[in-house]
Length: 57
Image (spheres, rainbow, N blue to C red):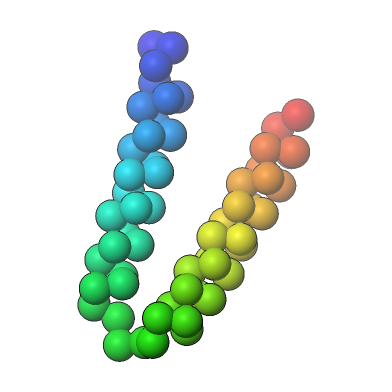
C-alpha cells in the first residue's frame, strides 16, 4: 500500500501529459494563445493543490 500514493501521482501526471497533447492536436488556437491558457490553467491548479495541502497540515 505504500506505492499507492506514488502510483496515483504518476497516473495523475500521465493523464495531464496525455490531455495536454490531445489539446494541442485538436485546438483551433494559435501556439502562443494555447501556451498561455495552459500556463494559466496549470498555475491555477497548482495553487489549488498548494491550498489543499496547507489545509491538511
